[in-house]
Length: 284
Ligand SMILES: [Mg+2]
Image (cartoon, rainbow, N blue to C red; front, side, top):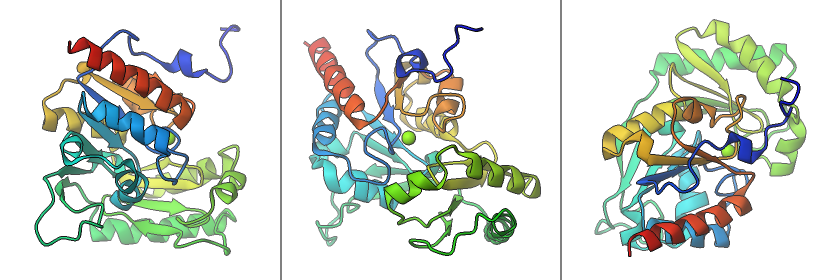
């Protein structure tokens, strides 16, 4: 075990056969398709469009649909034909959206026009109220309840409660600086979890702790995706930046879905460009 690297490299976390041609490609969002809470950069958008031309694509994240709208839909400049091959799974797939084509009467400027919520698996109002109260109490007790924040610290995302230490709108630099080791998030997670036994409490993005129904993580979303698309998980490829055992993409790897680990959007864009070309070539 002494030759085990302490920080696993992207290549060592990859389980997918590099030659395989997936029937569907699923992506994590933050730090995989885009910098955290930021728009998909143009080269990544171009790579994604090329992939959508040859295979169905899913984006799955702990974030909610508005993040998908702002970070992905408003930026990728995809055609309606490409959008019909895009599957959106906010809040780890407890919600699922498909593109049905632009509805008449809706403004074209709204990037969510034509998108339909296919299902939602929400928390009850009682679970939300209790969750908010316990997270605030424990965060205050641990000295993690910040007074200078950018937007609300606690957010009801329907199927998920999210604690964002500095608020949802906090600048990336401030978020990075808040808990570089992940220690604070872990302490809050450990303090809250015993008080909400029927719910899952998990450390999420850079400053966040997510509370969901038990058993809801990206593996849950990937299983739901296989159900709704009929595409087997073995034929699916998942791409994410946190496939290490402590990462929020790890449940997908643990489920046995072929995974490709990336270090950031530049890495993803290069990989997706090559994959799209390989899929396109296989069709001829
Ligand atoms: Mg990520």
